[in-house]
Image (cartoon, rainbow, N blue to C red):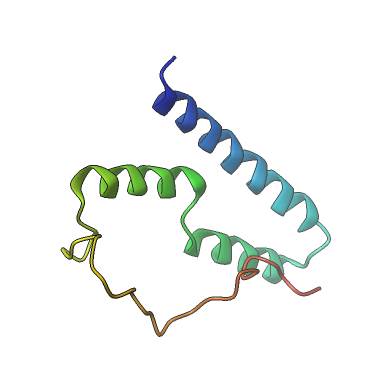
Length: 90
């Protein structure tokens, strides 16, 4: 098995595990809180999508906006999400 296929399998299994853990700990939430958790999870890319997107960018050398990856200035975004945006306050 080549490295990319193995990494794809690891990414898919990681996504599955992360979703099952999120909904296991989300079981005591109310229906509206579970819907909110589900929508928050769906707003973010999963591990597999991130890996495929990274592979695509690595091959092309150009990101989705058409700019070269190798620019001297780092990108800044005004829309910054906290690292624990998937966590739901109980």
